[in-house]
Length: 121
Image (cartoon, rainbow, N blue to C red; front, side):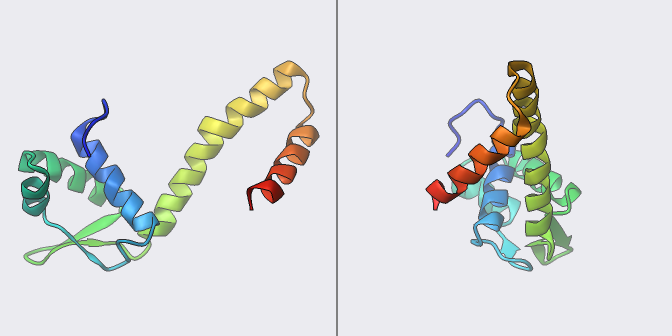
């Protein structure tokens, strides 16, 4: 699981987010404890704790003292909104800039995307 250059805590947080988005972890569902993550993945518990803390700070997880960590009811919506924002900022904004530099009208890009939508189904 932990094989790229991304810090392990970030990979754990991303894995949990992916599980929320694909429905493996549902709203209100309990998440493994930091100690369980640490034991299962053979990592330092502080690394798992850092990932969980980040997810709590983002409002994706919440902690019930003495009970454990749970998926926030609106976690999927928050993650989808974050993904949408990053997509527009990191993918579409540069695409629009490059299209303008190349003299490609935005209507051509829209037409192309519409044609691709049918091809991807």
